[in-house]
Amino acid sequence: MKRAIYPGSFDPVTLGHLDIIKRAAAMFDELIVCVSVNSSKHTGLFHPKERVELLRRVTEGISNVRVDCWDGLVAEYARRNQARVLVKGLRAVSDYESEIQMAMLNTKLYPRLDTIFLYTRPKYAYLSSTVVKEMARYGSDLSDFVPRQIIEDVEKKVRGTQERM
Ligand code: PNS
Image: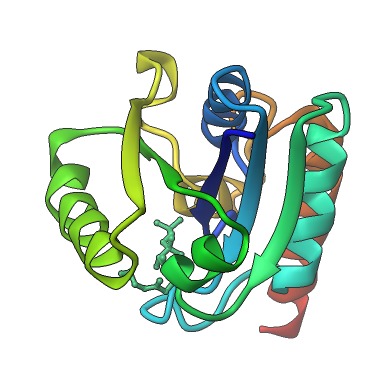
């Protein structure tokens, strides 16, 4: 069984993430999308459990995709789940430097682990969860940014945080 892991913050999942998920799922027997906590991003918009719920909703039609959550090292998660491939999306050359460093570190931590990079489709190259949150704060139409099933959740969550400000 060829199993791969697609780790990320997914706060929230974007159309760019979903495109990578679909393409990676077509390459492996099983793809685990793993909501993983990025220690440099202290506060998220969504709680990791909510991100899992949103991811499950948008991937429910893809039978070989499983969504999970993990707050340890990704390499350790891969070892425990007997996966030898991590999937990462690359938007621009600027992503490359930190991603290649992470990939090498992950192989150092778990030598059987390799990372493959899928380029982001040009139509999503500008897109990130940060962009989505920014657009939502200004009340922009999110339909070009996130899967339609979660638009309301993002709008509601951002409204909720603005009311508390
Ligand atoms: O979507 P992001 O924020 O680019 O994802 C980054 C993430 C969560 C995949 C990365 O920070 C990560 O792997 N964190 C888990 C901790 C870990 O394994 N660190 C070692 C590799 S840097």
